[in-house]
Image (tube, rainbow, N blue to C red):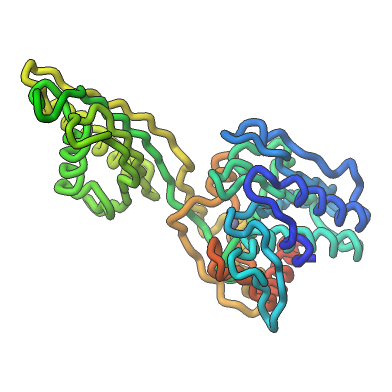
Length: 379
Ligand SMILES: [Zn+2]
């Protein structure tokens, strides 16, 4: 079944065939159609998708707090056209030009096989929700736009994504992205440079300030830690024109929201102050406008959070040593936390994700399925 899901093309926004295949398997195993629904998350995303989040809600065969198992259906573009092929203990794409897409079809397969096992064997379980999320790779959109009420307000939530089974991700950093538009004044660089205001000069001064002040790259101040990066810069048209525009994209990250805000403020201040320092002969200055947005908020689960306690016990029960981690990238779990569903993330045996060398360790995958079954049934 994992090979079946890996073979379906489905980059972000094009998850419909994956969702249909999952529904097919569920219905075949006896899942009532009425338990299966889709939300409209794909209508809120920057690029419209062809399907929303797939949500399956099963009433419990015994009472207890509702549990949620989730994974994301989309894969990164390098995995488009993957030809999953088993060799020994691993699955990889037979086409060396593509990745496998085990991130995160293997996660979908873990969640789906858990549901199929429960349905086929008639296993006892508390109220259960399955969430197959869309558009994780392009901005965590499925988890961002899902509504806790549609999920039945689960109390314990488990996300299956890339990495080793024993890796238990209990927190992740928060990320902020900025588009910085610098407006200068054009002029002939040879005839009348003093009549111009160089947008490139403004950007350069600002970046130099950030570097000199310790606000670019790894940022460590007063015991706090974060990162920042000016990642792109587009400016200028010819050597004989004073550049009248520069467009830059930058980001700031920190596990500490207040410190991340300080980094953002430092970037804003650097650009605004640089704009005042580059003047034309008549005193005209340039202008900077910054458009920023929070990509995802940081989160950190407590050690006694029920999903963390259960995930740790389940990993131990299969003979592995749990390895708690805090991620420096965003996860669907970032938005699940914002939406009121604290979620712990476990791996499924995927290796070298987002590359053409991606492969799935089938032994680890089977172990993840055993962990997931324990988490779903609560025993
Ligand atoms: Zn993933």
